[in-house]
Amino acid sequence: MYAKSTSCEQLVPVPWDVAPLRSSQALHSALAKKFVDRNVVEIGTRSGDTVNCYAQIANRTVAIEMNRAYCKVLRSRREELENTTRSTIRSATGLTSTNLEGASYGVVCSRYQSAPNETWKDVDYVFWWIEGGIKANIQVLRFLRSVKGLRSGALAMLAHDLTDLDTPAILTPIAEYTEQVLPTRLECKNCLARLQHYCSKRMMSLDAHVLRKVGCHRAASVANLIAIRIDSPQLEVLLNTTFREREITSLTIEDARSASVAAGYHPLSATPGKCWLTKDALTNNETMVNFIEPELGTARSAAAIGTAKSGSRARSPSQSWHCKEHCQNCDGLCTWEWLSAKGVPARQGTGCPPYTLPWFV
Ligand SMILES: C[S@@+](CC[C@H](N)C(=O)[O-])C[C@H]1O[C@@H](n2cnc3c(N)ncnc32)[C@H](O)[C@@H]1O
Image 1 (cartoon, rainbow, N blue to C red):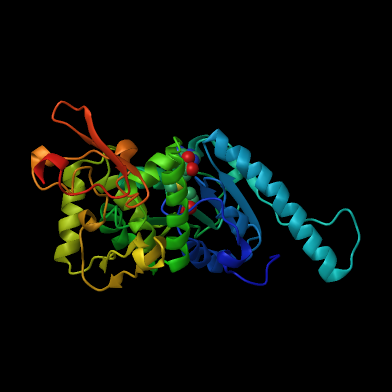
Image 2 (image 1 turned 90 degrees about the vertical axis):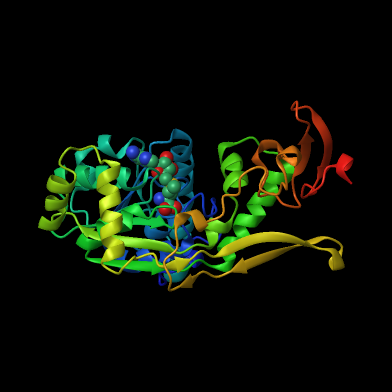
């Protein structure tokens, strides 16, 4: 272990990505505590805000990422990390040797299903937070059961948030443990800063599109970690009985969800947090960060998480609005345009679209 701390906020002070495009650094820190001197594989790392932290804490870290662009970033960040940690060791110890090893991690640029066998050798923890909900999670678990070389008792660590309630319903009953991680104001602030950038620059990247569409409320939601022993008989039973046919039917999911509600528990019993920007007229339209922490306690549905749809501010169908480029979360930051019934731009402006069309006032 190179680092004295397990705080990923400290070890990766300038992250590349923001939540909810990736999981929160608070979640990374919760994992880092478990990863001290262990062998860790992460499936799907994006630009590596996670592994750049774990590599300073774990015995061995491997990043698997199928997206080539992220892989390129991972390799360059790894070099930077090696150099920085090497200089830190030099200045702390006074050693001048050129052979000093800095913190580092392996990068496997492929889908996890095609990673070389040695990737899995002596691994204690496999972490992932990938798109696809319960179906994708079951696929990874099924794959890990078939992998050779993992340490006995190796744990699968899956993360998810309130947008996926099927995963906890199905997997909590066989989990070793689960852990909820609260969001931070800093993560909300960083998300809003990125959103503001994407809104003002009218960026066309996929991240820009996603963030403008989803907004930052998800950056203020609770994350849940589920730890499952990969060699546990319970997992085998689950995969062989509940999911015998490989295809997970919506009926199976529905059953598990009802069972979890009937059993009186739902692991994500939190009200969603909120994170949004407002303009303060008193201070010359300066933008203000608004962050409301989620409350743990009562079960809520995923629908409660804000992914506002275009037109939600409209009072009647004839007044429906269309904010260009899915800018609905750019309140106060985006350019909007009213479309006439024929879809022709009728009026344009910046900031929040007004409630009333000009010809109605
Ligand atoms: C939501 S990001 C998660 C980033 C990071 N794990 C975190 O928690 O912040 C999901 C990443 O998984 C990658 N991914 C999805 N499916 C994958 C697969 N089958 N094999 C490898 N990477 C995958 C995507 O390219 C993306 O970079």
